[in-house]
Every structure is written in structure tokens, then in C-alpha cells.
Image (cartoon, one colour):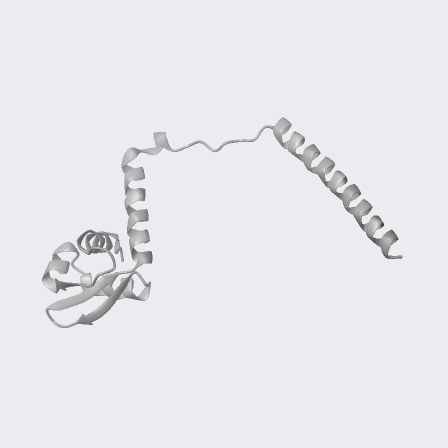
Length: 127
């Protein structure tokens, strides 16, 4: 069940972390299966339902719900922009990887020598 449309609608119409009362007919106009979707959003921790009766539901959107709606909006923008604008993966050259490995090895050797010297000094003073 896709809850993105209903969650986006709720985020647009609720300011901050305040509770708001919605008519169930209003939510059903957004999504025909609004009641099931609200239960799913509640189960996933995206909304908190204060009360619900036959005609109305009082709820607020959680921080994780707002983050999910923002992520859904970002994904929709990416889909409409097309695949041409997706960044290409950056491949690191063999030279760069080799250089990094050599620097790490020399740094490890240098750190080992300095650490050994410090331990030697501490043990020789303590003895």
C-alpha cells in the first residue's frame, strides 16, 4: 500500500508538531484507502493519532514522518529530472590508491617507532 500521497498531504496541512482534526471524507478524497493507510503510518511511527471516530480523526505527524515525506518528495524530483542528471560514480585511479597505501604504511611504521621509543623511555625510567 502506497502511503506517500497521504503522508505528503498531512505534512503540507499540519504545521510543526501540532495536532489537527481532519474529516475522514477529506482524507478519503486524497486516498480512497485512507483509514488503512493511517493505520500503517501509525504502525511505522510516522503519525500519532490522538483520537478517531466515524467522521473525524485528530493526528499529528512525527519527525520521522516529516523526514519520510521529504525523502519521498526528493525522490519524486529526481524521477522527474531524469537519469541524465544522476552523478556518475567516481573511480579512484590506481596511482591514487597506491599512493594512499604507501602513505598509510609509512605513517604506521613511524607511529610504531615513536610509540616504541616512548614505551622504552617509560620502562627505563620506572626500572
